[in-house]
Image 1 (cartoon, rainbow, N blue to C red):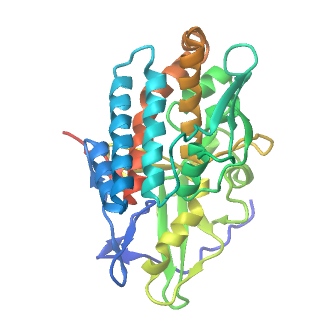
Image 2 (cartoon, rainbow, N blue to C red):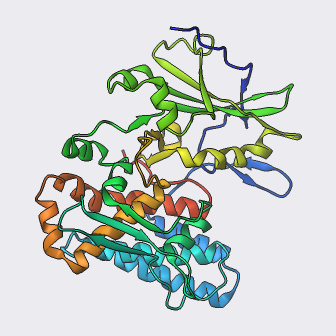
Image 3 (cartoon, one colour):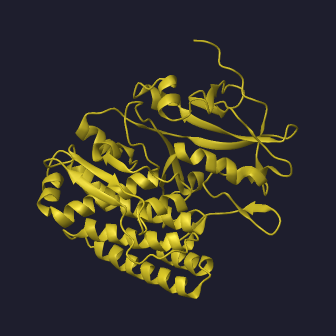
Length: 374
């Protein structure tokens, strides 16, 4: 095997006397500089979201509207948590109304009267294989899905159908249930750590991502496949970890294009994080390791259509099952009792809380986590 290149000389980025923990919102802009931002612990993320709406929506009329959407969203969500046959539909309407509140809090000033889902569902026969979620945009009324994705900082989605079979393997939670039901290979690789490093002399900042050899060998994932299907090819390259760690099981991927800074390295942290979010997936955890988050790479086969941002794929699948329950409840029962039943049941029971905490973090622009209770 060819000798790996050496990592660029660098030091960990230290803020307030400790290495800066990677997250989507590690710092916050203060009066003149960026400062460290810790995790917000919340048993009730709805209260965090309500506080953000009150803080961010300046127009009294728009604030009342957003809070009314939020109140309805919470009621739908609580009703869906009762695990009734209508739960997937109620849960989707909870997120639809929450999405409207998020859109308003992110500066949208147009009318939300008559706002549309921005999604529809098509199917051929029954089950998952012939089903698609169709993205719509344009027209005189707001399409909530497309508007929400853009307001969250993602590229506005292209219109057209995306197969449910293509969306299903993009969920971290329940992925192995999908893998076992479909007979497909593993598509997620957990990242052991993501590290901010910088070169003081050159005034540049970049990321190092760490993962374990065993996670690659267990599923027969080559380094070239990891970089290509993980979306890292041309962005990251593998470097020799030996001078950096004593743990011989670790693999180190180093960002190829450092970000320059002129004042402090924290001035460019937010932009660096934003640039890497499209290739990261994550789950909200109850443990403090790595800031109550666990990050993953999704290995999307090069010929597989429909790779979406994580929040988008979660939203679309929740919409899909809500639509099935609304129009063809007998089909949802058949799916739940079929080959993909364990995966579908896990999706409608576990994904809503994950998505809720993710959206609470997005609207607050600060990581929100459920506190561990010992």
